[in-house]
Image (cartoon, rainbow, N blue to C red):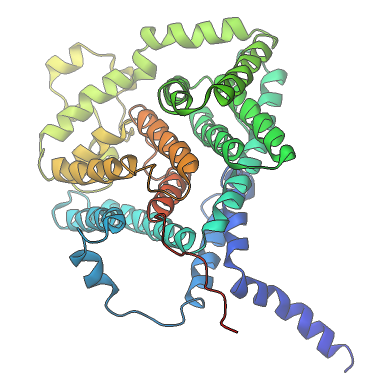
Length: 428
């Protein structure tokens, strides 16, 4: 009987921690995202999904006073509360995706996609509002993701050293392009930590993480990631830095380039990736886009229903004259669009694509002057822009790293200077 009390306390402590500190689950979730494939059982379980479920459940116990009229207020205060416009557009997009079920050419595929989108959207909004309520959690969240991405990047570099001339990845990644997108976010997040931290060791860690993740992006051989990171660094981040920060980040980038050309066969590897883009049309993307556009034109306004692109894709949907001008080697049944904009316009039409682009535009137009964390807003806008660039070549609409970027930027966008976000001190 003497062991009952200690044993009960030991069993209840994790439950109490889970309910009292949901941010711990959020930190674990963001750390696990870059390493998701390592902790996954194919088709059965992923650690990140379990952690997100526990995080959402813990938030239920944080609600002390339910506000019944929150949704009408969300809609009616479009002009009065600009920060909620992002939420309205997100809900409008989800509503349009759901409506596409009623005219879908393959309702079962549409329903599966609706469930996947709903899970991602609910999780993203939950993270956004949690960060708005507890702004001190944003830096630990970024650190957690950068740590996971750094581990993945180190493993990817080690894999390249074992097998030069091959596109590097890491255990559990879907492919090299997915790996590049994961470490790309880690690279830019590391810059955000470097800009905002005051701790010397954290600054050194951030520079190291940036260098490792950037090197891994290059070794992945993913050309869309190369374009994305160059554009965001050169056109978004570097021009807004002071000259000291500009020189420091430029020096770090130079050291990455110097380290890159010390690796075996890297010149031949990079040359082959660049020249192959013109030879095979970007791994057949131009051919895929030609057939995909034929699909989109059949119902340009409303689309064929969410999740139907892969169902409709094949040689049967394109005119013979179009097939004569492209390499049909890549035109096989069930191929993805390799372009999020083509995918959206073919599945949910111009209306769905317009709502999505309006949502992204509002996120990218978040003011730096009125924000609580202008440096982090800048970095997360660069991350979102990088993914929108990659989205022109990859199908990343359901990737969790994209939704995490949206969630973090959404949460920071809802903060304004002059508002009190921390709990007020108790009165004596």
